[in-house]
Length: 223
Image 1 (cartoon, rainbow, N blue to C red):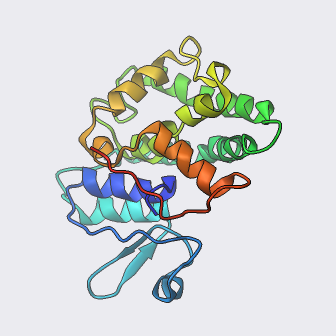
Image 2: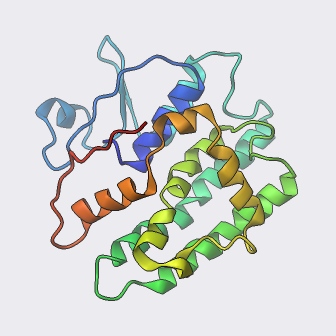
């Protein structure tokens, strides 16, 4: 599913590792039988021999293991790897209010408190990036942590499209994350799968807002 942030995690990991693969997008409202027989949710990584792996973080870890051993998305230091895993897990505290806040824009009154929760839970990542004193969480280049949280930052501009400038990511509060977002846009894997903010917003309108077309096949031509 082209617009799923969790599926995008797998695409980013595979691309960053230089793994060749084919993408099969699934209409989540009309899931084919073969898909349901494996697992009811995206992403699924399937080998030619029929073996498959599910769940976005597990798929990403698996890709890191089977891909080019000269490129490690996880830190090689066990402690740093464990710390990054915690930060990926803690990002669920951002994802929940992020998604619910976006969906609230399809209602008469958006839930501003949910946006505040998103920002409050992002403070941890601003502080972490400041303490690491580097361009990416992975240092000089993006690592697993960067790629696993990126899909939600890519979709952040939807808040401004739906709610106006008061829903910007405040640069004064998040100077490190703001600069990180700009740096991430220069990464080849990110550029490969990047969609315009308006495309994400149109998908949200189509699928999640009342009166939307429920068009899961909505795609854009990315140039």
